[in-house]
Image (cartoon, rainbow, N blue to C red; front, side):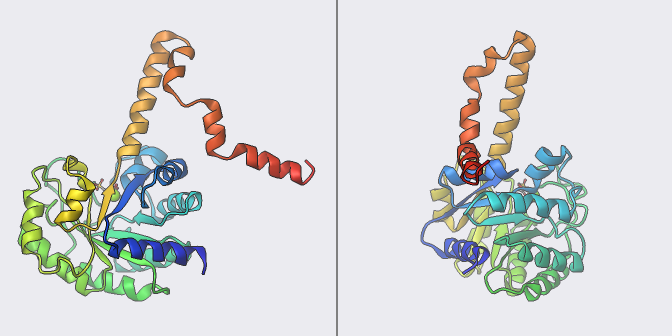
Length: 297
Ligand code: SPV
Ligand code: MG
């Protein structure tokens, strides 16, 4: 079995297992590798993370499909875990979504997630609901159907993300959209929310007839006190901790730079940064040099 199929099967097993599939957002190959080392189940290629860390631009559909795919491929090559790539709204219209599926599938990525924000999207965590238009439900369902028909393997995973709660359309609309996307062939539904109390999510869970019939995905950035076990008990199968490694990196760099600027030396930050040898080990430097020597270099 090829590597992509193994990863896709692993992802599918995780989506139907009796325990939650705990996924963490990566922004580059090293963050993906560390997520794997710390024992998580899958990698989320965060659009927010890639926009921020690779391009220093806001999460507003400014990163192109090719750039996002390149980032996903780098992460995928650094890990054995399945990689789920955040593909925003599929980078355009129906045919963009179809091409996105074909390109990501051909590149060996385990699965993608496509949301119903119109192009150009805005990150879901931005304050306010103004100017957040959703793709009409029927149109998004058409795109999902076309996307599922475009994939050439059985195993590639397509997650449909519903932004109805984020956009302030309420539980009823969230249920309608989740049903329409499941019916169109999505392999899982990501129900996004930024309601800290979880009452919106609870309302959805209490009313959605699809619960238990198709895996449900949560991104608890704004309800972070719930454990993955608690969210699993409520009905979520995949939990995505989407951006914490990125935010940790930014804070660590800011703290380090501030201290060096104040102290005028490097020794002052030494105790709080990774040792050079640790970095060498992380990228298997010794093994690579041995390989060189094996061939007589
Ligand atoms: C991302 O990590 O890019 C996401 C999750 O899509 S969120 O930032 O909550 O929209
Ligand atoms: Mg995103």
